[in-house]
Image 1 (cartoon, rainbow, N blue to C red):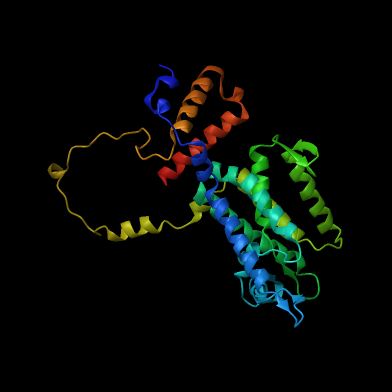
Image 2 (image 1 turned 135 degrees about the vertical axis):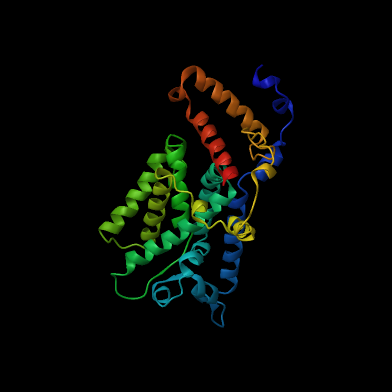
Amino acid sequence: MGIYDRDYYRREGPSFLGSIAERGRVCKWLIVINAVVFVFQLLTLDRNAAGIVEGPGELTRRLQLDSERVLDGQVWRLLTHAFLHNYLSWAHIIVNMVVLWWLGSQVEEIYGPKEFLALYLVAAVVAGAAQLLSVLPMPGNHFALGASGAVSAVAVIFACHYPYRQVLLFFIIPMPIWLFVALFIGQDLITFLFRLPTNTGVGAHLGGALFGFLYYKLHWRVLNLWPDLKGWRKRRARPQLRLYREEDQPAPTPVDVTAPAGSDLDEHLEAKLDAVMEKMSLVGKENLTESERQILLRASEIYRRKRT
């Protein structure tokens, strides 16, 4: 019986608009939060009596990456700086959010919303720490803001999964995404190594990119490092000592090794997975296409989350 004969494959899946609404939920919330914070940045700018902008405003000053303040103990700035943007240039937030949506929504689809949110926030902190370390040898106080470091991590992870996906450099020149990302990282690396003058936080870019590369290559999962609080509470609730007799033990029940009924695999993904598994049994894993390999990866991620 083919996969098209199965009941779950014949059933209608979510509508086109429904699938769009479900896609990239975390990315959408991140974009909304960044946009709202940017509006408050604009509303709280320092202005003189004539209404001319004279400074970044109280909100930006309290949340931006300020090297002296962080060293004084305000470590939350390592994260909050990633939700601020340059109030003098709308391109700063627009470019970051467009890239976050284009690439991040697909990375979120691979790893799941919770893991994607965790890796994005950790990437933001790592980028902030890298930026701080990069300016410590320089005299004076240094400031930085922007989501570019976390977005750089997402871009590197995407390029590792889909290295030959085509993008347009300057909306004109087609090139694979791996080359596109490598060009920007290379530019930041040259600027950093030769201490070229710049208003860009190249330390944050490089720190985020390195985190993204290691995350992919070493198969890191941020949620695996998070303490299992629910499991801890269950263990605490168990009795410390229990007496039993062998004849009182119930007969063992067979264990169902199939995916649970409440599995996170949607119907279409499960059908695609069946087709990929059938092809792999016939021609081997090495003959699978990149998209088919991604289906295997997504399915394995979902089953892993169900087990943890």
